[in-house]
Length: 260
Image (tube, rainbow, N blue to C red; front, top):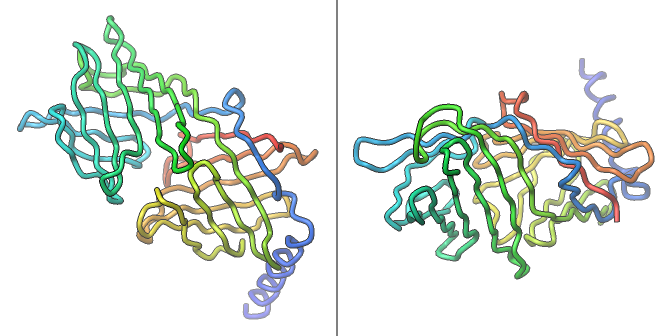
């Protein structure tokens, strides 16, 4: 068993070392929203006895209590959110991190109460705004936000990955728009996620599966929050990132990036 483990370790180290000279992931990659898909997940608003609401996502990514009176409610990772009604079937949401606004969102229910559209306007650290729009169809409930809503369509903001090999066996992944980076060896070890909007204790572990495939696990505070696989196409022009929450592989997100 020790010999097998040693052989495996040496193979991984050799593969990682080769990446410094010839890394097919290296380059600048831009998201193509038209080729990406985000279907499958649901969000739920439940009414609480005290008159406020509980919001949750089926992938386990978010779960918190919220009102519509403009009060700040705590969300994990140091974030807060406040909401206020905007008309009969709409509301505005303000997300903050350490008191600084990170996103101004708007939720709007259609006149027939069957469709919910959420528009997110994210305040990026580079000074730009990243706008995403998600359309959800009602699964349960009759009027207002209370009920379960299933993802029907997502128009994601466009952002970029910049991938480099700064030293032998090391990979560096950056999202310039968010000034976020991860740097480490693709050997399965946790590397800290750095950036002004990174969560405390946020890490990503990269594992080199083959020269054109990397698996990864995202964690916050040591707890797995997401996992996925990044693959380079045969012609080296497309990077596909398939991701899902632990135990929710059927609710998979696929993002397609084109090399610039």
